[in-house]
Length: 321
Image 1 (cartoon, helix red, strand yellow):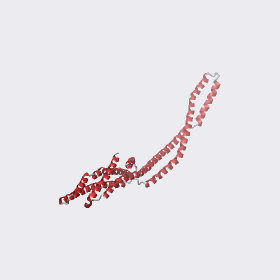
Image 2 (tube, one colour):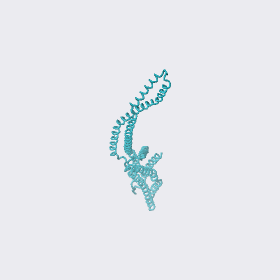
Image 3 (cartoon, one colour):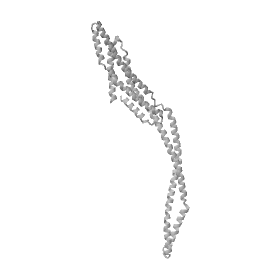
Image 4 (cartoon, one colour):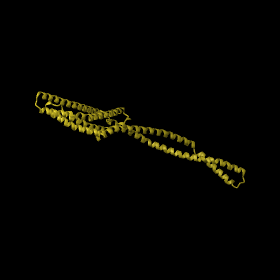
């Protein structure tokens, strides 16, 4: 029963994990699998619960005891009539038990047949095209890595250069200082520091002019914007490719999970099949009673019925646990 319970749990887990499968036909097949799994469970439980009640018939044993006593009496007309009546009742009760058992076995057999007809793992032909598409996407993604890395490097260099230029532009703040120094010269032309001040102003002016003429700040900013636009396009395309790859990879994973269902489905069917085999074996051992051998056949029916009932009751207890 452990094998049966494990197989059932695996089936339910795999089927419920694939509720978002991309193939509608397999989505319906998985729903059908769970339905047939439930039907088979019910048929098996009905057999475990009802068959022992059909076979555990104390009244049948009482009839056999009465028949044995009557056969020990003188064979007068009344005795023979009673023997015939009891024999008919024994045959009727055995036949009723057999009919009930036949019904349970038939329902269980039908459930197993229907379960076997649900095939969700026949997806081998779908796997190669997806693997080919994954390989193609990997090649495209790899081909874009070089240009993307180059653009990122260029963007980094431009960012560094622009940052340096923006730092140089801070020298503009010294223009106010230069103007103040010039005003000092006009106010106090005899100041002994005038020579140094003039030299400083001239050097500062040369530096500011050099920075202004040699660095094309606006051109660099436009170049960075152009590279950023290229990067946006390339990165957007890369994201789209990765999303496509994730979708294809998910499809492949789902197909592989579908194939995993086959093993627990077979294991479950085999375990339930053991129960069906026990019922069929009992049926084969006990065909319709022959009146000339009714006592021996009915006694064997009772004895084997107890063995089968014990087996079914044990399975039922294990099922509940």
